[in-house]
Image 1 (spheres, helix red, strand yellow):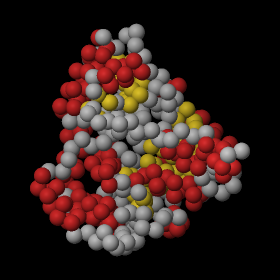
Image 2 (cartoon, rainbow, N blue to C red):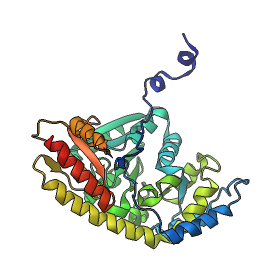
Image 3 (cartoon, rainbow, N blue to C red):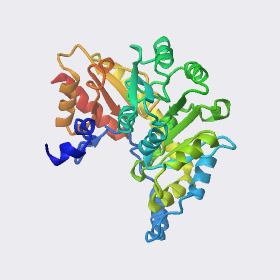
Length: 362
Protein backbone atom coordinates (compact mmCIF):
# COMPACT_ATOMS: atom_id res chain seq x y z
CA UNK A 1 0.00 0.00 0.00
CA UNK A 2 1.38 3.43 -0.99
CA UNK A 3 1.90 6.42 1.27
CA UNK A 4 -1.11 8.16 -0.31
CA UNK A 5 -3.32 5.11 0.28
CA UNK A 6 -2.13 4.92 3.87
CA UNK A 7 -2.77 8.51 4.86
CA UNK A 8 -5.45 10.02 2.57
CA UNK A 9 -9.13 9.28 3.12
CA UNK A 10 -10.67 6.95 0.55
CA UNK A 11 -13.47 9.39 -0.28
CA UNK A 12 -10.98 12.22 -0.83
CA UNK A 13 -8.88 10.07 -3.17
CA UNK A 14 -12.05 9.33 -5.13
CA UNK A 15 -12.83 13.02 -5.60
CA UNK A 16 -11.99 15.00 -8.71
CA UNK A 17 -10.43 18.42 -8.16
CA UNK A 18 -12.66 21.41 -8.82
CA UNK A 19 -11.99 22.15 -12.48
CA UNK A 20 -11.61 25.72 -13.75
CA UNK A 21 -11.00 25.86 -17.53
CA UNK A 22 -8.42 28.15 -19.07
CA UNK A 23 -10.28 31.08 -20.62
CA UNK A 24 -7.31 32.76 -22.28
CA UNK A 25 -8.33 34.32 -25.58
CA UNK A 26 -12.01 33.44 -25.09
CA UNK A 27 -15.18 35.39 -24.47
CA UNK A 28 -15.56 34.24 -20.86
CA UNK A 29 -19.21 33.65 -19.98
CA UNK A 30 -18.93 30.57 -17.76
CA UNK A 31 -18.47 31.82 -14.18
CA UNK A 32 -21.24 34.36 -13.43
CA UNK A 33 -18.79 37.25 -13.07
CA UNK A 34 -19.68 40.91 -13.43
CA UNK A 35 -18.00 41.86 -16.75
CA UNK A 36 -17.63 45.54 -15.85
CA UNK A 37 -14.52 46.99 -14.24
CA UNK A 38 -14.55 50.06 -12.02
CA UNK A 39 -14.42 53.45 -13.77
CA UNK A 40 -10.90 54.70 -14.47
CA UNK A 41 -10.95 57.40 -11.79
CA UNK A 42 -11.98 54.94 -9.08
CA UNK A 43 -9.38 52.43 -10.25
CA UNK A 44 -6.68 55.07 -9.92
CA UNK A 45 -7.92 56.06 -6.48
CA UNK A 46 -8.09 52.42 -5.40
CA UNK A 47 -4.51 51.91 -6.54
CA UNK A 48 -3.36 54.71 -4.27
CA UNK A 49 -5.34 53.25 -1.39
CA UNK A 50 -3.82 49.80 -1.86
CA UNK A 51 -0.33 51.27 -2.09
CA UNK A 52 -0.68 52.44 1.50
CA UNK A 53 -1.75 49.06 2.88
CA UNK A 54 0.68 47.65 5.46
CA UNK A 55 1.26 44.27 3.85
CA UNK A 56 3.98 43.52 6.42
CA UNK A 57 1.36 43.35 9.18
CA UNK A 58 -1.36 40.82 9.88
CA UNK A 59 -4.92 42.04 9.43
CA UNK A 60 -6.78 43.32 12.47
CA UNK A 61 -8.96 40.21 12.95
CA UNK A 62 -12.10 42.06 14.04
CA UNK A 63 -12.46 43.63 10.56
CA UNK A 64 -14.68 46.21 12.26
CA UNK A 65 -14.45 48.84 9.53
CA UNK A 66 -15.33 46.40 6.77
CA UNK A 67 -18.14 44.86 8.78
CA UNK A 68 -19.63 48.30 9.49
CA UNK A 69 -19.65 49.11 5.78
CA UNK A 70 -21.27 45.78 4.87
CA UNK A 71 -23.98 46.29 7.49
CA UNK A 72 -24.60 49.88 6.39
CA UNK A 73 -24.46 49.37 2.62
CA UNK A 74 -25.80 45.86 2.03
CA UNK A 75 -29.04 45.72 3.98
CA UNK A 76 -28.15 43.85 7.17
CA UNK A 77 -30.97 44.54 9.66
CA UNK A 78 -30.42 46.47 12.89
CA UNK A 79 -28.86 44.58 15.81
CA UNK A 80 -27.47 41.92 13.48
CA UNK A 81 -23.79 41.43 12.72
CA UNK A 82 -21.82 39.55 10.10
CA UNK A 83 -19.10 36.91 9.93
CA UNK A 84 -16.70 37.21 7.00
CA UNK A 85 -15.19 34.48 4.86
CA UNK A 86 -12.72 34.07 2.03
CA UNK A 87 -15.61 33.81 -0.41
CA UNK A 88 -18.84 31.98 0.37
CA UNK A 89 -16.99 28.67 -0.05
CA UNK A 90 -15.14 29.29 3.21
CA UNK A 91 -18.36 30.29 4.97
CA UNK A 92 -19.98 27.03 3.88
CA UNK A 93 -16.95 25.11 5.17
CA UNK A 94 -17.08 26.96 8.50
CA UNK A 95 -20.75 26.14 9.00
CA UNK A 96 -20.08 22.49 8.14
CA UNK A 97 -17.23 22.23 10.64
CA UNK A 98 -19.28 23.84 13.41
CA UNK A 99 -22.31 21.59 12.82
CA UNK A 100 -20.55 18.27 12.09
CA UNK A 101 -21.82 16.22 14.99
CA UNK A 102 -21.58 12.43 14.45
CA UNK A 103 -24.28 11.38 11.97
CA UNK A 104 -25.32 14.95 11.19
CA UNK A 105 -27.01 15.61 7.86
CA UNK A 106 -27.00 18.44 5.31
CA UNK A 107 -30.06 18.71 3.08
CA UNK A 108 -30.66 20.77 -0.05
CA UNK A 109 -32.84 20.69 -3.14
CA UNK A 110 -30.92 19.52 -6.19
CA UNK A 111 -29.56 20.51 -8.62
CA UNK A 112 -27.80 23.14 -6.51
CA UNK A 113 -24.39 24.68 -5.84
CA UNK A 114 -21.92 21.79 -5.72
CA UNK A 115 -20.11 23.07 -2.62
CA UNK A 116 -23.05 22.25 -0.35
CA UNK A 117 -22.52 18.54 -0.90
CA UNK A 118 -18.72 18.69 -1.14
CA UNK A 119 -18.32 20.68 2.07
CA UNK A 120 -20.65 18.31 3.90
CA UNK A 121 -18.62 15.32 2.74
CA UNK A 122 -15.30 16.86 3.71
CA UNK A 123 -16.66 17.63 7.18
CA UNK A 124 -17.83 14.04 7.61
CA UNK A 125 -21.55 14.84 7.28
CA UNK A 126 -24.19 13.07 5.21
CA UNK A 127 -25.62 15.00 2.26
CA UNK A 128 -29.21 14.40 1.15
CA UNK A 129 -30.42 15.98 -2.08
CA UNK A 130 -34.14 16.38 -2.74
CA UNK A 131 -34.87 16.72 -6.49
CA UNK A 132 -36.65 19.84 -7.65
CA UNK A 133 -39.81 19.60 -9.72
CA UNK A 134 -39.49 19.66 -13.50
CA UNK A 135 -39.99 23.45 -13.52
CA UNK A 136 -37.17 23.77 -10.92
CA UNK A 137 -39.53 24.78 -8.13
CA UNK A 138 -39.35 23.18 -4.69
CA UNK A 139 -41.11 19.85 -4.32
CA UNK A 140 -42.59 20.77 -0.97
CA UNK A 141 -44.10 17.36 -0.03
CA UNK A 142 -40.74 15.73 -0.77
CA UNK A 143 -38.81 18.44 1.07
CA UNK A 144 -40.96 18.23 4.20
CA UNK A 145 -40.88 14.44 4.15
CA UNK A 146 -37.07 14.44 3.86
CA UNK A 147 -36.77 16.98 6.67
CA UNK A 148 -38.97 14.83 8.93
CA UNK A 149 -37.02 11.67 8.09
CA UNK A 150 -33.45 13.00 7.98
CA UNK A 151 -33.68 15.69 10.69
CA UNK A 152 -30.95 17.73 9.00
CA UNK A 153 -28.66 20.02 10.94
CA UNK A 154 -28.36 22.32 7.91
CA UNK A 155 -30.71 23.08 5.01
CA UNK A 156 -29.42 25.12 2.06
CA UNK A 157 -31.81 27.10 -0.12
CA UNK A 158 -30.10 29.12 -2.86
CA UNK A 159 -32.18 32.22 -3.65
CA UNK A 160 -31.91 32.48 -6.69
CA UNK A 161 -30.72 28.96 -7.32
CA UNK A 162 -27.55 28.03 -9.17
CA UNK A 163 -27.55 26.62 -11.85
CA UNK A 164 -31.25 27.06 -12.60
CA UNK A 165 -31.54 30.81 -11.96
CA UNK A 166 -35.04 30.76 -10.50
CA UNK A 167 -36.35 32.09 -7.20
CA UNK A 168 -38.12 29.62 -4.95
CA UNK A 169 -41.55 30.62 -3.67
CA UNK A 170 -40.94 32.77 -0.58
CA UNK A 171 -43.93 31.19 1.15
CA UNK A 172 -42.33 27.75 0.71
CA UNK A 173 -39.11 28.98 2.34
CA UNK A 174 -41.14 30.38 5.24
CA UNK A 175 -42.88 27.00 5.62
CA UNK A 176 -39.50 25.26 5.83
CA UNK A 177 -38.24 27.79 8.38
CA UNK A 178 -41.27 27.25 10.58
CA UNK A 179 -41.15 23.46 10.22
CA UNK A 180 -37.52 23.39 11.39
CA UNK A 181 -37.60 25.99 14.17
CA UNK A 182 -35.29 24.80 16.94
CA UNK A 183 -34.06 21.76 14.99
CA UNK A 184 -32.36 22.87 11.75
CA UNK A 185 -30.32 25.82 10.54
CA UNK A 186 -31.83 27.11 7.28
CA UNK A 187 -29.27 28.92 5.14
CA UNK A 188 -30.67 31.14 2.41
CA UNK A 189 -27.78 31.61 -0.01
CA UNK A 190 -28.20 34.94 -1.77
CA UNK A 191 -25.08 35.00 -3.92
CA UNK A 192 -27.08 36.53 -6.80
CA UNK A 193 -29.18 38.95 -4.76
CA UNK A 194 -28.07 42.07 -6.70
CA UNK A 195 -29.87 40.67 -9.74
CA UNK A 196 -32.94 39.33 -7.94
CA UNK A 197 -33.87 42.47 -5.97
CA UNK A 198 -35.54 40.39 -3.29
CA UNK A 199 -34.05 39.05 -0.10
CA UNK A 200 -34.62 37.20 3.14
CA UNK A 201 -32.11 39.45 4.92
CA UNK A 202 -34.90 41.66 6.37
CA UNK A 203 -36.58 38.51 7.74
CA UNK A 204 -33.67 37.59 10.02
CA UNK A 205 -35.41 38.98 13.14
CA UNK A 206 -38.45 36.79 12.41
CA UNK A 207 -36.66 33.42 12.33
CA UNK A 208 -33.98 32.45 14.89
CA UNK A 209 -32.95 29.48 12.70
CA UNK A 210 -32.39 31.62 9.56
CA UNK A 211 -28.92 32.49 8.28
CA UNK A 212 -28.48 34.62 5.14
CA UNK A 213 -25.25 34.11 3.22
CA UNK A 214 -23.94 36.35 0.44
CA UNK A 215 -20.81 37.07 -1.57
CA UNK A 216 -19.54 40.22 -3.23
CA UNK A 217 -18.26 38.11 -6.13
CA UNK A 218 -21.32 38.51 -8.34
CA UNK A 219 -21.61 42.17 -7.38
CA UNK A 220 -18.37 42.83 -9.22
CA UNK A 221 -15.59 41.84 -6.81
CA UNK A 222 -14.98 38.17 -7.61
CA UNK A 223 -11.22 38.66 -7.59
CA UNK A 224 -10.98 39.73 -3.95
CA UNK A 225 -12.80 36.65 -2.55
CA UNK A 226 -15.11 38.01 0.14
CA UNK A 227 -18.27 36.46 1.53
CA UNK A 228 -20.42 37.40 4.51
CA UNK A 229 -23.23 35.83 6.48
CA UNK A 230 -25.69 37.22 8.99
CA UNK A 231 -27.86 35.59 11.64
CA UNK A 232 -28.65 36.03 15.30
CA UNK A 233 -25.65 36.93 17.42
CA UNK A 234 -25.77 33.62 19.30
CA UNK A 235 -25.30 31.70 16.05
CA UNK A 236 -22.65 34.04 14.68
CA UNK A 237 -20.55 33.67 17.85
CA UNK A 238 -20.39 29.91 17.36
CA UNK A 239 -19.40 30.13 13.70
CA UNK A 240 -16.80 32.78 14.46
CA UNK A 241 -15.05 30.24 16.71
CA UNK A 242 -14.15 28.08 13.70
CA UNK A 243 -13.23 30.98 11.42
CA UNK A 244 -9.51 30.82 10.62
CA UNK A 245 -7.65 33.78 12.12
CA UNK A 246 -6.74 36.52 9.65
CA UNK A 247 -8.90 34.87 6.97
CA UNK A 248 -9.53 38.17 5.16
CA UNK A 249 -6.26 39.60 3.85
CA UNK A 250 -5.40 43.28 4.09
CA UNK A 251 -5.70 43.92 0.34
CA UNK A 252 -9.17 42.37 0.21
CA UNK A 253 -10.18 44.38 3.25
CA UNK A 254 -8.92 47.68 1.85
CA UNK A 255 -10.39 47.06 -1.62
CA UNK A 256 -13.80 46.06 -0.25
CA UNK A 257 -13.97 49.05 2.09
CA UNK A 258 -13.11 51.39 -0.78
CA UNK A 259 -15.58 49.92 -3.25
CA UNK A 260 -18.41 49.79 -0.70
CA UNK A 261 -17.89 53.51 -0.18
CA UNK A 262 -18.82 53.75 -3.89
CA UNK A 263 -21.58 51.14 -3.84
CA UNK A 264 -23.70 53.23 -6.20
CA UNK A 265 -21.32 52.24 -9.02
CA UNK A 266 -21.95 48.55 -8.34
CA UNK A 267 -25.69 49.17 -8.16
CA UNK A 268 -25.65 50.79 -11.61
CA UNK A 269 -23.67 47.88 -13.02
CA UNK A 270 -26.17 45.39 -11.57
CA UNK A 271 -29.05 47.36 -13.10
CA UNK A 272 -27.31 47.30 -16.49
CA UNK A 273 -26.84 43.54 -16.24
CA UNK A 274 -30.48 43.01 -15.33
CA UNK A 275 -31.42 44.92 -18.48
CA UNK A 276 -28.96 42.87 -20.55
CA UNK A 277 -30.36 39.65 -19.04
CA UNK A 278 -33.86 40.46 -20.22
CA UNK A 279 -32.65 41.32 -23.72
CA UNK A 280 -30.48 38.21 -23.96
CA UNK A 281 -33.38 36.04 -22.80
CA UNK A 282 -35.59 37.50 -25.54
CA UNK A 283 -32.93 36.83 -28.18
CA UNK A 284 -32.46 33.23 -27.03
CA UNK A 285 -36.22 32.64 -26.93
CA UNK A 286 -36.41 33.60 -30.61
CA UNK A 287 -34.25 30.61 -31.53
CA UNK A 288 -36.58 27.67 -32.21
CA UNK A 289 -34.07 25.06 -31.09
CA UNK A 290 -33.73 26.33 -27.52
CA UNK A 291 -35.82 26.39 -24.35
CA UNK A 292 -34.88 29.33 -22.12
CA UNK A 293 -35.71 29.27 -18.42
CA UNK A 294 -36.66 32.32 -16.32
CA UNK A 295 -33.77 33.76 -14.32
CA UNK A 296 -33.42 36.17 -11.42
CA UNK A 297 -29.62 35.82 -11.47
CA UNK A 298 -26.88 37.13 -13.78
CA UNK A 299 -26.99 34.05 -15.97
CA UNK A 300 -29.45 32.17 -18.13
CA UNK A 301 -30.07 28.43 -18.30
CA UNK A 302 -31.23 27.05 -21.63
CA UNK A 303 -31.90 23.61 -23.08
CA UNK A 304 -30.90 22.43 -26.55
CA UNK A 305 -33.61 20.50 -28.38
CA UNK A 306 -34.63 19.24 -31.84
CA UNK A 307 -31.48 20.22 -33.75
CA UNK A 308 -29.64 16.92 -34.06
CA UNK A 309 -27.18 18.30 -31.51
CA UNK A 310 -26.86 17.87 -27.78
CA UNK A 311 -25.55 20.30 -25.17
CA UNK A 312 -22.00 19.00 -25.52
CA UNK A 313 -22.08 19.56 -29.29
CA UNK A 314 -23.23 23.13 -28.78
CA UNK A 315 -20.69 23.74 -26.01
CA UNK A 316 -17.87 22.48 -28.23
CA UNK A 317 -19.12 24.50 -31.19
CA UNK A 318 -19.10 27.66 -29.11
CA UNK A 319 -15.62 26.86 -27.83
CA UNK A 320 -14.37 26.50 -31.41
CA UNK A 321 -15.77 29.98 -31.99
CA UNK A 322 -13.89 31.32 -28.94
CA UNK A 323 -16.85 31.56 -26.56
CA UNK A 324 -16.77 29.76 -23.20
CA UNK A 325 -19.99 28.98 -21.33
CA UNK A 326 -20.87 26.17 -18.89
CA UNK A 327 -22.14 22.73 -19.83
CA UNK A 328 -24.32 21.68 -16.89
CA UNK A 329 -26.07 18.79 -18.63
CA UNK A 330 -24.30 16.13 -16.58
CA UNK A 331 -24.86 17.73 -13.18
CA UNK A 332 -28.35 16.24 -12.73
CA UNK A 333 -30.99 14.51 -14.82
CA UNK A 334 -33.23 17.57 -14.56
CA UNK A 335 -30.53 19.48 -16.46
CA UNK A 336 -30.34 17.11 -19.40
CA UNK A 337 -29.04 18.95 -22.48
CA UNK A 338 -28.77 22.24 -20.58
CA UNK A 339 -26.17 24.98 -20.83
CA UNK A 340 -25.64 28.03 -18.63
CA UNK A 341 -24.40 31.37 -19.95
CA UNK A 342 -23.34 34.37 -17.89
CA UNK A 343 -24.86 37.70 -18.89
CA UNK A 344 -21.99 39.80 -20.20
CA UNK A 345 -21.49 43.20 -21.74
CA UNK A 346 -23.60 44.07 -24.80
CA UNK A 347 -20.61 43.22 -27.02
CA UNK A 348 -19.96 39.89 -25.25
CA UNK A 349 -23.62 38.97 -25.53
CA UNK A 350 -23.58 39.84 -29.23
CA UNK A 351 -20.53 37.64 -29.82
CA UNK A 352 -22.16 34.80 -27.89
CA UNK A 353 -25.41 35.00 -29.86
CA UNK A 354 -23.58 35.13 -33.17
CA UNK A 355 -21.47 32.10 -32.23
CA UNK A 356 -24.53 30.24 -30.96
CA UNK A 357 -26.55 30.84 -34.13
CA UNK A 358 -23.60 29.68 -36.25
CA UNK A 359 -23.15 26.58 -34.07
CA UNK A 360 -26.82 25.61 -34.26
CA UNK A 361 -26.79 26.03 -38.04
CA UNK A 362 -23.58 24.08 -38.62
